[in-house]
Each structure stands twice: as C-alpha cells, then as structure tokens.
Length: 463
Image (cartoon, rainbow, N blue to C red):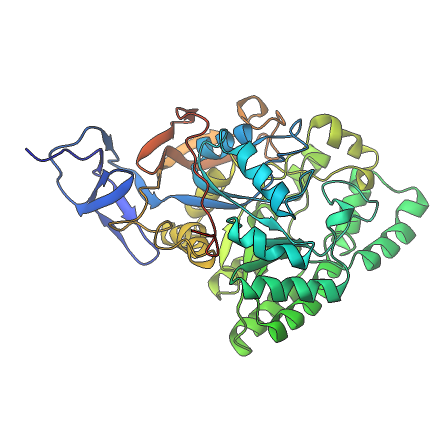
C-alpha cells in the first residue's frame, strides 16, 4: 500500500487570484502534492466545508522589535499573534538595536530569532552602508530596507542613525541593491520640512496633545506631504539607477503619492511596487479618538486607497504591526510628538481584511493576489510560496467568512497587551493557519511551537 498523505484539506472552496473552485488538497512532506480528490488515505484531515481556503497570507511589514527592544515585542510573541490571526509568512523590519546593517549584526539577529518563530519569516537587511549591502544580500536578506526619514524630535522607532537623508548615499544604496538583484524598500520623507512646520504651528505654541498631533497630520505635516516630496526624489533616483523600488506606507500618504507611482509604473515603465497601508483606511476618527496614542493615523483619502487597488497602483496590502508598550505610548495623550506612534496589526490583520471582503470592498480573489501571490512574486519567493499548486509550500489560511468577533485587549498575544482596534467588530476570521502542512493555529488558539517557523532567504543568498 502506498504511503498516505500527511494532510488532506477537504470540502473547502479554494480561492486563487483568478478563480474560485471546490477541490481537495493533499499534502506530503510540507508540500502540496495534489489538488482534486477525493483522497482516501491521509494521516490527518481538515474538513473545510463551508470555509474559504486561501494560499497562506503574508504580513510584509512587521516590527517584532528583536533585538534591543523586546520589552515592546519579541519574535515569539509577535509571530504568535500573526499565527493566531491567520498569517503564515512575515517580513520583519530593521529598526533594532543593533540594527542589521552589517553582516555581523544581521547574522546575530538571524540566530537570535530562529528558535522563536511560529510562522515562516524573512528579514530585511538594513540600508545604511552601501559597502555592506552585498554581504547582507548573500546572508539572505529579503530586500534592503531604507529609512529615508527621521522623527522630528529624534524619537524611536526612527533610530536617527538609520536615517538616510543624504541623497548621494541613498543613490549608492540603490546601486548596491540593484547589483544584488534585490528590492529596495523605502520609508520616504522630507523630515526637515515636517519639523519646521510642526514646530512652528504646534510644538512652539504648546499644542502637543494627541488631538493636536492628529490635527497636524490632517494638514499633512506629520506623515504627509513630506513623505510625498521624499518619494518624488526617490522615484527619480531609482529610475535612473534601475533599482527595483518598493514604496512603503502608501496608505499613509496624500493622494499625490498614488499619482506619482501610477505615472512611474504605467507611463514610464519603471520597476516600482508599493504596499497599501490598510490600517489607515480601517482606522476611523472615532476609533482614533478612543485609543489615542495607541494607534497612528487615518487615511487622507480612503477612496483613493481603494482606487489604488482597482487601478493597479497598489501591488500588495498590509496592516503594519509596530508595537510599543503602554508605558511608551500613553504619555502621548499629553504630548504625542514626543512618544512613539504605535499600532498593532499582526493578530488583527486577517479579521479586518475579511471584514472588508464582507463589506464588498475586496473579493477573496483580491486577497489571494494582494496578500499572497504579489508579495511572493515581488520578493522572489514565487512559486515556492504565495500559490496553491503542486510543489508549492503547503501554506494555507482557511477562513470562516461568517465568524463574527470583537477585538479585546485581553485576547491579544502581542506583548503590548492591547489592540489599536479595541472594541471594533469584524465578520470573517481564520479557522486554521497552516504552515508547510502543519497547523500552527486553530480557532483563535496557538497550537504550534516556537521555532517551527523557518527563515526564508532572499534571491541573492549564497548557496
């Protein structure tokens, strides 16, 4: 008798970027071995009747704060929250202490987080020294993350040393990243412009509370027009350099950013992609006023964000996870310009996304494209991940579109102990998070072990 399959997912509806259909999926040795069915022999079965079976969904903008800031979050707690939420693959950012801008510090981070991950993950290399980019790429960096910004008051998480404001250095980082074939992912800004106007109209006048901060945002001072100005220069330098540019935080920026990116992609044929910050579109004014410094901002123009998905400006979607402790952020009720601006999103991402599907803003096919296939393609991991087809990693996010829930602080696995979305009701949630054929979370409970998640190296990694 032939060996039984390790896992069979049966009776579900599979959703890909282009189609939806009923079929069973068989898994062997962590890979998809067959699609169709019925499959009679299996060591384990998951009955997905009435459920949506999606390719494993990615969270491409995580700050798990390790090393150096683990009182805010660490790789175990952050990846556990992601797993329970329905995420199978995370990309972690670089504003750590020490930051992974040299081979030594990158390898240290790799070794430190490996025993802690609940889901598969990739790590950016920090873009600060053009001379170290090659070593970071060969060590497995998924891309090079560049902070083209600094906080106006030098507040973490914007580590001042990581801010690349010299456009000559920025260009050299682009050259080095291009030569290694990686993506340069950039947080853009013009911080001196932001600083001057924010101090002039708010801080120097003693207007520093949370509502004043959000008023400054609504004017485009904080996370606004400066980001678009920084993007304008970056797009040009990236174009003449030929680097693959990935724009972070599209949802935070005014509509001018959408127009620039659309022009670069479709009129100029530039190799540029971007991730749409859905959190700003889900965060309404009432929720912001309730949680105050425990979140960041709402979108300038939510409809422009949805249009960016429809017209192809946005390539992928994200709900940034940028956690801080209560002690870090709560003084922001009185002075939000002097504390970190945090947001939780690892555990809440998929429920909020499914809620948007139930509201008719997205389809499950859109989700399969924007949160699985597109990031896998952009970062060079397709078709190993991001797709449901034989030979691919058996990563699945299985969703009950009728499951209702309310975010509660006490349910969050993040070390913060709170949710930016406290009290918000959603419809649609993950029932199973499956990574390489193994269930790591089920029905809102963590069932996997830390260390199961594997490091996924970038395309330039040495053999």
